[in-house]
Length: 261
Image (cartoon, rainbow, N blue to C red; front, side, top):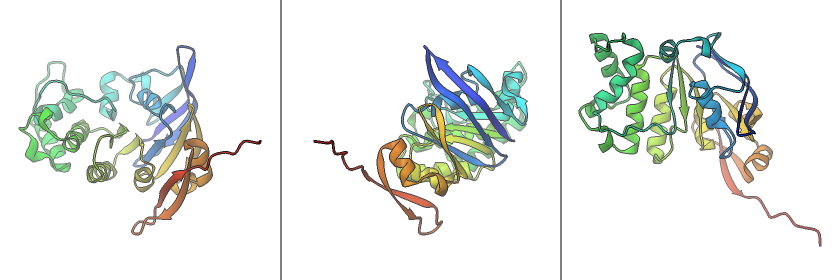
């Protein structure tokens, strides 16, 4: 399912957090948002998964305006994994994943055989079926992320929105989680902090700075030393990944600017 973000602007307390952002995610693509902290990535994603309504502009799923859909229908099409996804109560893993089935259940929630099969399949897909009876709060960070992705897959959406899904994970867990996302076959829009992971796993990147998109395209075309110096304030050296050939980056501080005497 295609996602269109059309001239979206978000204002709060007199400040423009996102300004006239337009982008498209084609069906089956993995598209990444990268940019400095506070650049507007999370704010834009909140608009896409309907936690926030934009001040102007529109978001469409499969050509239909997001806000014309009921909450239930929107949740059948799109699943989200926000940065602040927290489960305070010690549900079991099976119970957490079963929450993904709520959009498919009638007003009087009853778990059906179809629901159980969808949850079991989702847990197996992320390699977490052995955790089904564990308390969610007893899991490691990587295990929690796998379970939350399983919940999103159990929701059986066509679009997946992820806000910094690799935060607080070690490198092996980061690679594992992004491989799961990449292999899901869903249309994916994600914000990523690590530029090398973004270059490896995304088809297209949009660089956001001060609420605006300042560059868009394939990772190799976007992640240039000039742009990284301007947007992130670092010196970057580009090298090819030895297996995939994807652009990878080595960083150094920019030399101090000399002031005229």
